[in-house]
Length: 343
Image 1 (tube, rainbow, N blue to C red):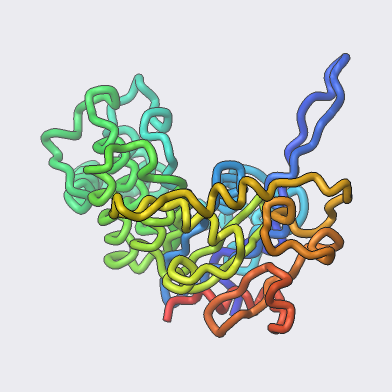
Image 2: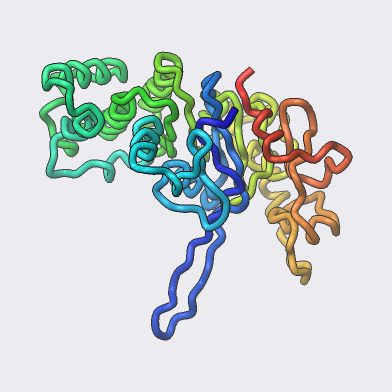
């Protein structure tokens, strides 16, 4: 059975320049990324990594906002570029987005009612105005907003947390199968993050929708998701059960990120591992065609510079792209997908 939504060896290269007097440059943002969301059971998968790791690029590929340079994005087994009008319309309805910035996603000339009504106007033209209004009020209640304090207002008249919850409500309007949430709580107050994350969990529980949660915050990724995919410079370095990956990271990069999480104990030192890794940044004079983390890794070997390591299955629920685990079996892309299916 084909996956509901799948990235298959997706690579994205951005080019710039090329005008008179400027050399054309290329930036590899994502390389051979693979991800598959099955129809059942619904899952919550976190895609994590530092800034520039390729998280947002992968989310935009999954949403069809940009096209891969190489590889494919498929919905129900069909590449997005090969879909006819009806198939593309079904994909647009069933895969919804929640973006990072609660300030830029709105047209300031329209009241927030417009953002909520537009999906119904596009996909449910036969629905009566009264039924549309009832649907809007219902989803606002689901995300913890009062209709009398939300509808009829312009975006600037709402707080950042209210604006972001309206975007969650908009994603709920069409009862999607997959929601791609790109850093949905990074630009709201800490006091509102729990409310927004709870709204995302409602999408998962009440609608049976899968959630792809893009974040650099490993704490919320651990709290929210079933599984996690760690990215570094556009490549997958570790994938599997979120409890295993966060509590006992295998890849040196994942260990570095986990060690950077502040501990709620002032007596325990913070940042020691970061200093250790930073001190290891080196220039070997070798052309690195292998692991992208090699110059920062305390366990680097000659093989690390020669070829990128595959994902090795270190146990039944996790894999790491590191030659430290070369004795473990290397996984094919379809085998990797099985590691982050909810148990």
